[in-house]
Length: 337
Image (cartoon, rainbow, N blue to C red; front, side, top):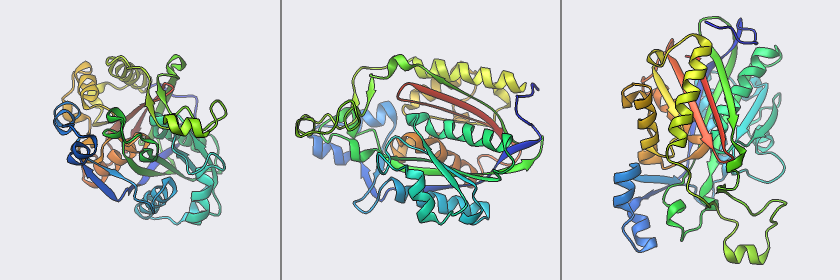
């Protein structure tokens, strides 16, 4: 095993997970009615999405985060006051400013925690997990770190755009990391990559300083999420395969050693192609899009929570988390539970 530049005697260990669910459950038939055409057949046959969850009027990114955080803290057996740092990964923040993490810190009662947000779009949770783990490895003042991936994209969807409105959904997933003096489990290695040439292919392009919201912007629907250009379908499988090999080579492991892969849930076929590239069975990659839709930075921690609580992964298992998101941003990490 190749040692990283960080102190392997102090690692970030997964102490607890949690999820925050949006209250509205929308089956595909809902969009058959609102769009006036059969989208259910395509969604079932091509991306295997059967229903998804959207926030109701009482919910927001912060409420989703709080639900996920409280569950994760309970499962970790600690109180909010024990937290030293909160990192929230989201590209649907509560406000442009201040950070979503600062609001969550106050409402959670985590009075001893520093906070910040990260935005690498749908790669955000893996980016934040990598960042949090390196904080723990590098600085002894960080004993407990809460990492949350949160997504309330339904607030940014054009109800007439079937390419986005049928796919994207809301939710939050959280993980509590604990510093542990150990060499046999915990966070092992992570990498992050950006291909910025794709920045203008998909995103929410109005509402910032480049395009402030105006009546004209609202009338044109430019404040909604947009697919501007179609991404090469081979891009994610190629990147995920390459990053898997790179991370595993660094720690002296092979794909066969990985008990479960947790990957961005944007397209089930991309997950299957990646498993084929790695010569692994498809069920090594957990899938949750069937009943959640696509929940961006919340998808990977939500999948992780289900795997942990349902016994699909157990202490001692090697897992990989691989995310990709607008920008384009990519992140991959390996850890032993």
